[in-house]
Length: 422
Length: 140
Ligand SMILES: Cc1ncc(COP(=O)(O)O)c(C=O)c1O
Ligand code: FES
Image (cartoon, chains in turn green, blue):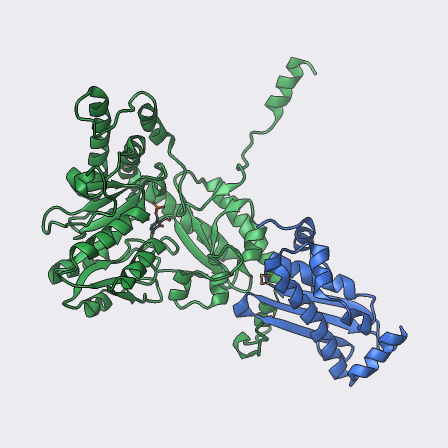
Protein backbone atom coordinates (compact mmCIF):
# COMPACT_ATOMS: atom_id res chain seq x y z
CA UNK A 1 0.00 0.00 0.00
CA UNK A 2 1.31 3.42 -0.88
CA UNK A 3 1.62 6.05 1.75
CA UNK A 4 -1.01 8.17 0.01
CA UNK A 5 -3.66 5.45 0.11
CA UNK A 6 -2.75 4.66 3.67
CA UNK A 7 -3.37 8.26 4.70
CA UNK A 8 -6.56 8.28 2.69
CA UNK A 9 -7.73 5.16 4.48
CA UNK A 10 -6.89 6.63 7.84
CA UNK A 11 -8.78 9.80 7.05
CA UNK A 12 -11.85 7.97 5.85
CA UNK A 13 -12.08 5.92 9.04
CA UNK A 14 -14.73 7.45 11.26
CA UNK A 15 -13.48 9.09 14.40
CA UNK A 16 -13.39 6.54 17.17
CA UNK A 17 -16.07 7.61 19.59
CA UNK A 18 -16.04 4.35 21.51
CA UNK A 19 -14.81 4.06 25.03
CA UNK A 20 -11.63 2.49 26.17
CA UNK A 21 -12.09 -0.79 28.01
CA UNK A 22 -12.01 -1.78 30.77
CA UNK A 23 -13.86 1.12 32.37
CA UNK A 24 -12.90 2.14 35.87
CA UNK A 25 -15.96 3.07 37.95
CA UNK A 26 -14.78 2.11 41.41
CA UNK A 27 -13.58 5.46 42.68
CA UNK A 28 -14.47 4.76 46.31
CA UNK A 29 -11.87 2.02 46.36
CA UNK A 30 -9.18 4.26 44.97
CA UNK A 31 -8.73 6.93 42.33
CA UNK A 32 -6.28 7.44 39.51
CA UNK A 33 -3.48 9.90 40.16
CA UNK A 34 -4.31 13.25 38.59
CA UNK A 35 -1.53 14.08 36.10
CA UNK A 36 -1.27 17.54 37.65
CA UNK A 37 -0.57 15.92 41.01
CA UNK A 38 2.11 13.75 39.48
CA UNK A 39 3.73 16.82 37.97
CA UNK A 40 3.87 18.51 41.34
CA UNK A 41 5.42 15.40 42.89
CA UNK A 42 8.08 14.65 40.29
CA UNK A 43 10.72 17.16 41.38
CA UNK A 44 10.52 15.75 44.90
CA UNK A 45 11.37 12.30 43.61
CA UNK A 46 14.46 13.43 41.78
CA UNK A 47 16.05 16.80 42.53
CA UNK A 48 14.53 17.69 45.89
CA UNK A 49 15.39 14.61 47.86
CA UNK A 50 16.37 16.11 51.18
CA UNK A 51 15.03 14.98 54.52
CA UNK A 52 12.45 17.52 55.64
CA UNK A 53 13.81 17.16 59.16
CA UNK A 54 17.34 18.21 58.16
CA UNK A 55 17.51 21.69 59.60
CA UNK A 56 21.09 22.59 58.69
CA UNK A 57 21.28 22.58 54.90
CA UNK A 58 19.33 23.67 51.85
CA UNK A 59 18.39 20.12 50.83
CA UNK A 60 16.38 19.79 54.02
CA UNK A 61 14.94 23.32 53.79
CA UNK A 62 13.69 22.77 50.27
CA UNK A 63 11.99 19.54 51.22
CA UNK A 64 10.51 21.20 54.28
CA UNK A 65 9.13 24.00 52.12
CA UNK A 66 7.30 21.45 50.02
CA UNK A 67 5.88 19.86 53.16
CA UNK A 68 4.87 23.21 54.64
CA UNK A 69 3.04 24.16 51.48
CA UNK A 70 1.18 20.85 51.50
CA UNK A 71 0.22 21.35 55.13
CA UNK A 72 -1.30 24.70 54.19
CA UNK A 73 -3.13 23.22 51.21
CA UNK A 74 -4.65 20.42 53.28
CA UNK A 75 -5.55 22.71 56.16
CA UNK A 76 -7.25 25.14 53.83
CA UNK A 77 -9.47 22.46 52.34
CA UNK A 78 -10.90 21.50 55.73
CA UNK A 79 -10.84 24.84 57.54
CA UNK A 80 -7.94 23.93 59.82
CA UNK A 81 -4.57 25.51 60.51
CA UNK A 82 -1.37 24.02 59.14
CA UNK A 83 -0.08 23.10 62.61
CA UNK A 84 -3.08 20.85 63.13
CA UNK A 85 -2.13 18.51 60.27
CA UNK A 86 -0.23 15.31 61.13
CA UNK A 87 1.00 13.27 58.19
CA UNK A 88 0.29 9.56 58.16
CA UNK A 89 0.52 6.67 55.71
CA UNK A 90 -3.20 6.86 55.01
CA UNK A 91 -6.55 6.77 56.70
CA UNK A 92 -6.11 3.34 58.23
CA UNK A 93 -3.21 4.71 60.19
CA UNK A 94 -5.06 7.98 60.82
CA UNK A 95 -8.05 6.15 62.27
CA UNK A 96 -5.81 3.96 64.41
CA UNK A 97 -3.83 6.93 65.69
CA UNK A 98 -6.91 9.00 66.44
CA UNK A 99 -8.90 6.30 68.22
CA UNK A 100 -6.13 4.49 70.06
CA UNK A 101 -4.30 7.75 70.68
CA UNK A 102 -7.33 9.31 72.37
CA UNK A 103 -8.28 6.14 74.22
CA UNK A 104 -4.84 5.77 75.75
CA UNK A 105 -4.40 9.47 76.48
CA UNK A 106 -7.78 9.98 78.13
CA UNK A 107 -8.10 6.64 79.88
CA UNK A 108 -8.18 8.35 83.28
CA UNK A 109 -11.21 10.32 82.16
CA UNK A 110 -13.27 7.39 80.95
CA UNK A 111 -13.27 4.16 79.02
CA UNK A 112 -16.26 4.43 76.73
CA UNK A 113 -16.24 4.99 72.95
CA UNK A 114 -19.22 5.37 70.62
CA UNK A 115 -19.20 4.40 66.95
CA UNK A 116 -21.60 2.91 64.40
CA UNK A 117 -21.84 -0.48 62.70
CA UNK A 118 -21.29 0.84 59.16
CA UNK A 119 -17.80 2.22 59.79
CA UNK A 120 -14.83 1.09 57.74
CA UNK A 121 -12.91 -1.85 59.18
CA UNK A 122 -10.07 0.51 60.04
CA UNK A 123 -12.38 1.97 62.70
CA UNK A 124 -14.31 -1.15 63.68
CA UNK A 125 -11.29 -3.36 64.14
CA UNK A 126 -9.46 -0.64 66.02
CA UNK A 127 -12.42 -0.42 68.40
CA UNK A 128 -12.47 -4.19 68.76
CA UNK A 129 -8.83 -4.15 69.72
CA UNK A 130 -9.56 -1.52 72.38
CA UNK A 131 -12.39 -3.66 73.76
CA UNK A 132 -9.84 -6.41 74.35
CA UNK A 133 -7.84 -3.87 76.32
CA UNK A 134 -10.70 -3.04 78.66
CA UNK A 135 -12.53 -0.27 76.82
CA UNK A 136 -16.28 -0.32 76.30
CA UNK A 137 -17.51 0.38 72.79
CA UNK A 138 -21.06 1.11 71.68
CA UNK A 139 -21.70 0.18 68.06
CA UNK A 140 -24.81 2.13 67.13
CA UNK A 141 -27.12 0.74 64.47
CA UNK A 142 -28.02 2.94 61.51
CA UNK A 143 -31.44 3.80 60.16
CA UNK A 144 -32.84 2.13 57.04
CA UNK A 145 -31.46 5.01 54.96
CA UNK A 146 -27.95 4.40 56.28
CA UNK A 147 -27.70 7.51 58.46
CA UNK A 148 -26.89 7.41 62.13
CA UNK A 149 -29.39 9.03 64.48
CA UNK A 150 -28.04 11.96 66.49
CA UNK A 151 -30.56 11.16 69.21
CA UNK A 152 -29.09 7.66 69.44
CA UNK A 153 -25.63 9.12 69.94
CA UNK A 154 -26.91 11.48 72.61
CA UNK A 155 -28.64 8.63 74.41
CA UNK A 156 -25.47 6.55 74.30
CA UNK A 157 -23.21 9.18 75.86
CA UNK A 158 -22.38 8.46 79.49
CA UNK A 159 -20.04 10.18 81.95
CA UNK A 160 -17.50 7.56 80.92
CA UNK A 161 -17.62 8.48 77.21
CA UNK A 162 -14.38 9.98 75.92
CA UNK A 163 -14.77 9.68 72.16
CA UNK A 164 -17.41 9.52 69.45
CA UNK A 165 -16.15 8.29 66.08
CA UNK A 166 -18.61 8.51 63.20
CA UNK A 167 -17.59 8.59 59.55
CA UNK A 168 -18.39 11.65 57.45
CA UNK A 169 -19.56 9.72 54.41
CA UNK A 170 -19.90 6.00 53.89
CA UNK A 171 -17.68 4.29 51.34
CA UNK A 172 -20.31 1.77 50.18
CA UNK A 173 -23.61 3.59 50.12
CA UNK A 174 -22.32 7.17 49.93
CA UNK A 175 -24.56 8.59 52.64
CA UNK A 176 -23.37 11.73 54.41
CA UNK A 177 -23.97 11.75 58.16
CA UNK A 178 -25.23 14.83 60.08
CA UNK A 179 -21.68 15.66 61.11
CA UNK A 180 -22.22 19.27 62.21
CA UNK A 181 -25.01 18.16 64.55
CA UNK A 182 -22.90 15.35 65.96
CA UNK A 183 -19.98 17.73 66.43
CA UNK A 184 -22.15 20.25 68.25
CA UNK A 185 -23.56 17.54 70.49
CA UNK A 186 -20.10 16.21 71.35
CA UNK A 187 -18.76 19.63 72.17
CA UNK A 188 -21.76 20.40 74.33
CA UNK A 189 -21.17 17.15 76.22
CA UNK A 190 -17.40 17.56 76.46
CA UNK A 191 -16.71 14.43 74.41
CA UNK A 192 -14.06 14.34 71.69
CA UNK A 193 -15.31 13.80 68.15
CA UNK A 194 -13.35 11.95 65.46
CA UNK A 195 -14.58 11.45 61.93
CA UNK A 196 -13.24 9.22 59.18
CA UNK A 197 -13.35 11.81 56.42
CA UNK A 198 -11.81 9.69 53.68
CA UNK A 199 -14.78 9.67 51.32
CA UNK A 200 -15.98 13.21 52.07
CA UNK A 201 -12.89 15.41 52.04
CA UNK A 202 -12.35 16.91 48.62
CA UNK A 203 -15.78 15.76 47.45
CA UNK A 204 -18.13 17.85 49.59
CA UNK A 205 -17.50 20.89 51.80
CA UNK A 206 -15.88 19.87 55.09
CA UNK A 207 -15.04 22.39 57.75
CA UNK A 208 -13.63 21.28 61.08
CA UNK A 209 -14.65 24.58 62.70
CA UNK A 210 -18.30 24.77 61.72
CA UNK A 211 -18.60 20.97 62.04
CA UNK A 212 -16.97 20.97 65.51
CA UNK A 213 -14.63 18.14 64.54
CA UNK A 214 -11.70 17.37 66.85
CA UNK A 215 -9.98 14.71 64.76
CA UNK A 216 -10.39 13.88 61.09
CA UNK A 217 -8.63 11.25 58.99
CA UNK A 218 -8.12 11.66 55.27
CA UNK A 219 -6.23 9.82 52.57
CA UNK A 220 -4.45 10.80 49.36
CA UNK A 221 -5.51 7.99 47.08
CA UNK A 222 -9.23 8.70 47.34
CA UNK A 223 -8.82 12.23 46.00
CA UNK A 224 -6.65 11.65 42.92
CA UNK A 225 -3.47 11.84 44.99
CA UNK A 226 -0.86 9.18 45.67
CA UNK A 227 -1.37 6.00 47.68
CA UNK A 228 0.32 5.45 51.02
CA UNK A 229 -0.04 8.99 52.30
CA UNK A 230 -2.72 10.64 54.36
CA UNK A 231 -3.23 13.08 57.17
CA UNK A 232 -4.88 13.34 60.54
CA UNK A 233 -6.30 16.65 61.64
CA UNK A 234 -5.77 17.12 65.38
CA UNK A 235 -7.48 20.12 66.95
CA UNK A 236 -5.15 22.48 68.83
CA UNK A 237 -7.63 24.87 70.42
CA UNK A 238 -11.07 24.55 72.04
CA UNK A 239 -10.17 21.92 73.06
CA UNK A 240 -6.53 21.08 72.55
CA UNK A 241 -6.53 17.40 71.69
CA UNK A 242 -3.68 15.22 72.86
CA UNK A 243 -2.79 11.83 71.47
CA UNK A 244 -0.72 8.96 72.68
CA UNK A 245 1.70 8.27 69.82
CA UNK A 246 1.44 4.86 68.21
CA UNK A 247 4.80 5.04 66.47
CA UNK A 248 7.78 6.14 68.54
CA UNK A 249 11.04 7.44 67.19
CA UNK A 250 12.54 10.72 66.12
CA UNK A 251 9.63 12.82 67.39
CA UNK A 252 8.38 14.03 64.03
CA UNK A 253 4.94 15.60 63.66
CA UNK A 254 4.95 17.14 67.15
CA UNK A 255 5.84 13.75 68.56
CA UNK A 256 2.56 12.23 67.44
CA UNK A 257 3.93 10.31 64.49
CA UNK A 258 7.62 9.62 64.18
CA UNK A 259 9.24 8.68 60.91
CA UNK A 260 10.94 10.51 58.05
CA UNK A 261 8.28 12.32 56.06
CA UNK A 262 7.20 10.94 52.70
CA UNK A 263 7.94 14.23 51.00
CA UNK A 264 6.83 13.43 47.41
CA UNK A 265 3.67 11.80 48.72
CA UNK A 266 2.91 14.71 51.00
CA UNK A 267 3.46 17.22 48.20
CA UNK A 268 1.09 15.15 46.07
CA UNK A 269 -1.52 15.03 48.81
CA UNK A 270 -1.30 18.80 49.15
CA UNK A 271 -1.71 19.35 45.44
CA UNK A 272 -4.63 16.90 45.33
CA UNK A 273 -6.36 18.88 48.10
CA UNK A 274 -5.74 22.16 46.32
CA UNK A 275 -7.25 20.83 43.07
CA UNK A 276 -10.20 19.22 44.86
CA UNK A 277 -11.02 22.49 46.56
CA UNK A 278 -10.71 24.54 43.40
CA UNK A 279 -12.83 22.17 41.31
CA UNK A 280 -15.32 20.95 43.90
CA UNK A 281 -18.31 22.97 42.75
CA UNK A 282 -17.94 22.07 39.08
CA UNK A 283 -17.05 18.46 39.80
CA UNK A 284 -19.99 18.00 42.14
CA UNK A 285 -22.36 19.33 39.51
CA UNK A 286 -20.91 17.12 36.79
CA UNK A 287 -20.80 13.93 38.87
CA UNK A 288 -24.26 14.44 40.32
CA UNK A 289 -25.62 14.82 36.83
CA UNK A 290 -23.81 11.73 35.55
CA UNK A 291 -24.89 9.72 38.58
CA UNK A 292 -28.55 10.69 38.20
CA UNK A 293 -28.34 10.01 34.48
CA UNK A 294 -26.97 6.51 35.13
CA UNK A 295 -29.67 5.83 37.68
CA UNK A 296 -32.37 7.11 35.33
CA UNK A 297 -31.20 4.96 32.46
CA UNK A 298 -31.08 1.83 34.61
CA UNK A 299 -34.47 2.46 36.19
CA UNK A 300 -36.06 3.10 32.80
CA UNK A 301 -35.17 -0.36 31.52
CA UNK A 302 -34.94 -2.57 34.60
CA UNK A 303 -37.82 -3.26 36.97
CA UNK A 304 -37.42 -4.20 40.63
CA UNK A 305 -34.42 -2.00 41.33
CA UNK A 306 -33.76 -0.21 44.59
CA UNK A 307 -31.32 2.52 45.46
CA UNK A 308 -29.54 2.00 48.76
CA UNK A 309 -28.89 4.85 51.14
CA UNK A 310 -30.43 8.27 51.64
CA UNK A 311 -30.11 10.12 48.32
CA UNK A 312 -30.65 13.60 49.79
CA UNK A 313 -27.57 13.34 51.96
CA UNK A 314 -25.25 11.72 49.49
CA UNK A 315 -21.86 11.87 47.85
CA UNK A 316 -22.06 13.14 44.26
CA UNK A 317 -20.26 10.19 42.64
CA UNK A 318 -21.91 7.32 44.51
CA UNK A 319 -24.74 5.10 43.36
CA UNK A 320 -25.50 1.85 45.14
CA UNK A 321 -28.26 -0.11 43.49
CA UNK A 322 -29.83 -3.52 44.02
CA UNK A 323 -31.03 -5.61 41.11
CA UNK A 324 -33.03 -8.25 42.92
CA UNK A 325 -33.65 -11.69 41.43
CA UNK A 326 -30.19 -11.74 39.87
CA UNK A 327 -27.20 -12.93 41.82
CA UNK A 328 -24.27 -10.58 42.30
CA UNK A 329 -21.43 -12.76 41.14
CA UNK A 330 -23.16 -13.72 37.91
CA UNK A 331 -23.91 -10.05 37.38
CA UNK A 332 -20.26 -9.12 37.79
CA UNK A 333 -19.33 -11.91 35.40
CA UNK A 334 -21.51 -10.33 32.76
CA UNK A 335 -19.99 -6.89 33.17
CA UNK A 336 -16.40 -7.94 33.49
CA UNK A 337 -15.08 -5.08 31.37
CA UNK A 338 -16.38 -2.63 33.97
CA UNK A 339 -14.71 -2.17 37.33
CA UNK A 340 -17.38 -1.72 39.99
CA UNK A 341 -17.93 -3.30 43.40
CA UNK A 342 -20.61 -5.74 44.41
CA UNK A 343 -22.54 -6.17 47.64
CA UNK A 344 -20.89 -9.52 48.01
CA UNK A 345 -17.96 -7.97 49.77
CA UNK A 346 -16.36 -11.39 49.71
CA UNK A 347 -13.55 -12.76 47.71
CA UNK A 348 -16.14 -15.23 46.60
CA UNK A 349 -15.06 -18.07 48.86
CA UNK A 350 -17.29 -17.02 51.72
CA UNK A 351 -20.06 -15.23 49.85
CA UNK A 352 -20.65 -13.06 52.88
CA UNK A 353 -22.83 -10.14 51.90
CA UNK A 354 -21.72 -6.62 52.77
CA UNK A 355 -22.17 -5.77 56.46
CA UNK A 356 -23.07 -2.22 55.51
CA UNK A 357 -26.01 -3.27 53.34
CA UNK A 358 -27.12 -5.74 55.98
CA UNK A 359 -27.06 -2.92 58.54
CA UNK A 360 -29.70 -1.16 56.44
CA UNK A 361 -31.90 -4.20 56.96
CA UNK A 362 -31.46 -5.65 53.47
CA UNK A 363 -31.75 -9.41 53.16
CA UNK A 364 -28.75 -11.40 52.07
CA UNK A 365 -30.31 -11.94 48.65
CA UNK A 366 -30.79 -8.22 48.06
CA UNK A 367 -27.34 -7.41 49.36
CA UNK A 368 -25.86 -10.00 47.03
CA UNK A 369 -27.51 -8.35 44.04
CA UNK A 370 -26.19 -4.87 44.79
CA UNK A 371 -23.66 -2.93 42.78
CA UNK A 372 -21.69 0.10 43.91
CA UNK A 373 -20.89 2.54 41.14
CA UNK A 374 -18.17 5.00 42.05
CA UNK A 375 -18.05 7.79 39.51
CA UNK A 376 -14.99 9.96 39.51
CA UNK A 377 -13.13 12.83 37.92
CA UNK A 378 -12.09 10.89 34.84
CA UNK A 379 -15.37 9.18 33.97
CA UNK A 380 -17.14 10.44 30.87
CA UNK A 381 -20.72 10.47 29.66
CA UNK A 382 -19.75 7.90 27.00
CA UNK A 383 -18.49 5.59 29.72
CA UNK A 384 -21.69 6.00 31.70
CA UNK A 385 -23.66 5.09 28.58
CA UNK A 386 -21.55 2.01 28.03
CA UNK A 387 -21.98 0.95 31.65
CA UNK A 388 -25.73 1.52 31.50
CA UNK A 389 -26.10 -0.47 28.25
CA UNK A 390 -24.00 -3.32 29.55
CA UNK A 391 -25.79 -3.47 32.86
CA UNK A 392 -29.22 -3.40 31.29
CA UNK A 393 -28.24 -6.19 28.88
CA UNK A 394 -26.79 -8.35 31.60
CA UNK A 395 -29.56 -7.88 34.15
CA UNK A 396 -32.27 -8.55 31.57
CA UNK A 397 -30.45 -11.64 30.37
CA UNK A 398 -29.98 -12.97 33.88
CA UNK A 399 -33.59 -12.19 34.75
CA UNK A 400 -34.60 -14.36 31.78
CA UNK A 401 -32.59 -17.07 33.48
CA UNK A 402 -33.92 -16.38 36.94
CA UNK A 403 -36.60 -18.68 38.34
CA UNK A 404 -37.22 -16.12 41.07
CA UNK A 405 -38.03 -13.37 38.60
CA UNK A 406 -40.43 -15.67 36.77
CA UNK A 407 -42.18 -16.62 39.99
CA UNK A 408 -42.52 -13.02 41.11
CA UNK A 409 -43.93 -12.10 37.72
CA UNK A 410 -46.50 -14.86 38.18
CA UNK A 411 -47.47 -13.34 41.48
CA UNK A 412 -45.90 -15.97 43.71
CA UNK A 413 -44.80 -14.74 47.12
CA UNK A 414 -41.22 -15.94 47.46
CA UNK A 415 -41.29 -15.69 51.22
CA UNK A 416 -44.05 -18.32 51.35
CA UNK A 417 -42.00 -20.98 49.62
CA UNK A 418 -40.25 -23.63 51.64
CA UNK A 419 -36.72 -23.37 50.34
CA UNK A 420 -34.29 -26.17 50.75
CA UNK A 421 -31.42 -24.33 52.34
CA UNK A 422 -28.20 -26.22 51.95
CA UNK B 1 -12.15 -15.17 39.85
CA UNK B 2 -11.14 -16.87 36.66
CA UNK B 3 -13.76 -19.06 35.05
CA UNK B 4 -13.03 -21.99 32.77
CA UNK B 5 -13.88 -21.58 29.10
CA UNK B 6 -16.69 -24.08 29.46
CA UNK B 7 -18.30 -22.16 32.32
CA UNK B 8 -18.06 -18.96 30.31
CA UNK B 9 -19.57 -20.68 27.29
CA UNK B 10 -22.57 -21.96 29.27
CA UNK B 11 -22.96 -18.57 30.94
CA UNK B 12 -22.95 -16.76 27.63
CA UNK B 13 -24.98 -19.33 25.71
CA UNK B 14 -27.02 -21.19 28.27
CA UNK B 15 -28.70 -24.30 26.82
CA UNK B 16 -32.33 -25.19 27.37
CA UNK B 17 -33.43 -22.11 29.26
CA UNK B 18 -37.14 -22.06 29.87
CA UNK B 19 -40.20 -23.46 31.48
CA UNK B 20 -42.21 -26.63 30.96
CA UNK B 21 -45.84 -27.03 31.93
CA UNK B 22 -45.63 -27.84 35.60
CA UNK B 23 -49.14 -29.32 35.66
CA UNK B 24 -48.49 -31.93 32.95
CA UNK B 25 -48.15 -35.47 34.27
CA UNK B 26 -45.18 -36.00 31.99
CA UNK B 27 -43.26 -33.14 33.55
CA UNK B 28 -41.17 -33.35 36.69
CA UNK B 29 -40.03 -30.14 38.40
CA UNK B 30 -37.12 -29.78 40.79
CA UNK B 31 -36.68 -26.53 42.70
CA UNK B 32 -33.64 -26.50 44.96
CA UNK B 33 -31.56 -23.94 46.85
CA UNK B 34 -32.68 -20.78 48.61
CA UNK B 35 -32.56 -17.08 47.71
CA UNK B 36 -30.70 -16.24 50.95
CA UNK B 37 -27.92 -18.62 49.99
CA UNK B 38 -27.60 -16.86 46.65
CA UNK B 39 -28.64 -19.82 44.54
CA UNK B 40 -31.93 -21.29 43.38
CA UNK B 41 -32.15 -23.83 40.58
CA UNK B 42 -35.24 -25.04 38.83
CA UNK B 43 -34.79 -28.00 36.53
CA UNK B 44 -37.66 -29.58 34.66
CA UNK B 45 -37.84 -32.78 32.67
CA UNK B 46 -40.44 -34.10 30.27
CA UNK B 47 -40.57 -37.89 30.34
CA UNK B 48 -42.01 -40.18 27.70
CA UNK B 49 -44.45 -42.36 29.68
CA UNK B 50 -43.78 -45.44 27.57
CA UNK B 51 -40.02 -45.43 27.31
CA UNK B 52 -39.18 -43.40 30.46
CA UNK B 53 -36.81 -41.44 28.26
CA UNK B 54 -36.33 -37.77 29.12
CA UNK B 55 -37.36 -36.07 25.90
CA UNK B 56 -36.95 -32.51 26.98
CA UNK B 57 -35.34 -30.59 29.81
CA UNK B 58 -35.40 -26.93 30.78
CA UNK B 59 -33.82 -24.89 33.54
CA UNK B 60 -33.75 -21.50 35.14
CA UNK B 61 -31.10 -20.63 37.69
CA UNK B 62 -30.52 -17.76 40.07
CA UNK B 63 -26.90 -18.13 41.09
CA UNK B 64 -23.31 -17.60 40.19
CA UNK B 65 -21.82 -18.38 36.79
CA UNK B 66 -20.82 -21.86 37.91
CA UNK B 67 -24.35 -22.59 39.09
CA UNK B 68 -25.75 -21.43 35.76
CA UNK B 69 -23.24 -23.55 33.88
CA UNK B 70 -23.85 -26.61 36.07
CA UNK B 71 -27.60 -26.51 35.50
CA UNK B 72 -27.25 -25.75 31.81
CA UNK B 73 -24.94 -28.74 31.45
CA UNK B 74 -27.30 -30.90 33.51
CA UNK B 75 -30.15 -30.27 31.07
CA UNK B 76 -27.90 -31.24 28.17
CA UNK B 77 -26.88 -34.45 29.89
CA UNK B 78 -30.31 -35.64 31.01
CA UNK B 79 -31.88 -35.18 27.61
CA UNK B 80 -32.16 -38.50 25.78
CA UNK B 81 -31.36 -40.49 28.91
CA UNK B 82 -33.81 -42.71 30.72
CA UNK B 83 -34.89 -41.62 34.14
CA UNK B 84 -32.67 -44.24 35.72
CA UNK B 85 -29.65 -43.20 33.69
CA UNK B 86 -30.22 -39.57 34.60
CA UNK B 87 -30.29 -40.51 38.28
CA UNK B 88 -26.79 -41.85 37.89
CA UNK B 89 -25.34 -38.46 36.93
CA UNK B 90 -23.16 -37.28 39.78
CA UNK B 91 -21.88 -33.87 40.68
CA UNK B 92 -18.27 -34.99 40.33
CA UNK B 93 -18.81 -35.49 36.62
CA UNK B 94 -20.11 -31.93 36.39
CA UNK B 95 -17.12 -30.64 38.36
CA UNK B 96 -14.80 -32.43 35.98
CA UNK B 97 -16.51 -31.34 32.79
CA UNK B 98 -16.66 -27.67 33.84
CA UNK B 99 -13.31 -27.65 35.66
CA UNK B 100 -14.93 -26.12 38.74
CA UNK B 101 -12.62 -24.98 41.56
CA UNK B 102 -13.23 -26.33 45.10
CA UNK B 103 -15.28 -23.30 46.24
CA UNK B 104 -17.70 -23.98 43.40
CA UNK B 105 -18.32 -27.64 44.07
CA UNK B 106 -21.56 -26.89 45.90
CA UNK B 107 -22.93 -25.37 42.67
CA UNK B 108 -22.55 -28.77 41.02
CA UNK B 109 -24.09 -30.50 44.03
CA UNK B 110 -27.07 -28.25 43.60
CA UNK B 111 -27.38 -29.33 39.96
CA UNK B 112 -27.32 -32.97 40.98
CA UNK B 113 -29.96 -32.21 43.63
CA UNK B 114 -32.07 -30.50 40.98
CA UNK B 115 -31.98 -33.55 38.69
CA UNK B 116 -32.98 -35.81 41.59
CA UNK B 117 -35.74 -33.46 42.70
CA UNK B 118 -37.17 -33.25 39.18
CA UNK B 119 -37.17 -37.01 38.82
CA UNK B 120 -38.65 -37.42 42.29
CA UNK B 121 -41.46 -35.05 41.39
CA UNK B 122 -42.15 -36.94 38.17
CA UNK B 123 -42.20 -40.25 40.02
CA UNK B 124 -44.58 -38.95 42.65
CA UNK B 125 -46.93 -37.67 39.98
CA UNK B 126 -46.89 -40.99 38.17
CA UNK B 127 -46.84 -43.24 41.23
CA UNK B 128 -43.59 -44.80 40.14
CA UNK B 129 -41.94 -46.53 43.05
CA UNK B 130 -38.18 -46.23 43.50
CA UNK B 131 -37.66 -49.91 42.79
CA UNK B 132 -39.72 -49.89 39.61
CA UNK B 133 -37.57 -47.30 37.93
CA UNK B 134 -34.49 -49.07 39.18
CA UNK B 135 -35.73 -52.12 37.31
CA UNK B 136 -36.19 -50.10 34.17
CA UNK B 137 -32.68 -48.84 34.66
CA UNK B 138 -31.32 -52.32 35.09
CA UNK B 139 -32.95 -53.57 31.95
CA UNK B 140 -31.90 -50.56 29.90
C1 LIG C 1 -14.20 5.07 54.77
C2 LIG C 1 -12.79 4.61 54.65
N1 LIG C 1 -11.98 4.65 55.72
C3 LIG C 1 -10.70 4.25 55.65
C4 LIG C 1 -10.15 3.76 54.48
C5 LIG C 1 -8.72 3.30 54.47
O1 LIG C 1 -7.92 4.29 53.94
P1 LIG C 1 -6.41 3.99 53.49
O2 LIG C 1 -6.50 3.14 52.27
O3 LIG C 1 -5.82 5.33 53.21
O4 LIG C 1 -5.72 3.32 54.62
C6 LIG C 1 -10.97 3.70 53.34
C7 LIG C 1 -10.46 3.17 52.07
O5 LIG C 1 -10.39 1.97 51.84
C8 LIG C 1 -12.31 4.12 53.43
O6 LIG C 1 -13.12 4.07 52.37
S1 FES D 1 -24.26 -21.15 43.46
FE1 FES D 1 -23.33 -20.57 45.31
S2 FES D 1 -21.39 -19.99 44.60
FE2 FES D 1 -22.23 -20.91 42.89
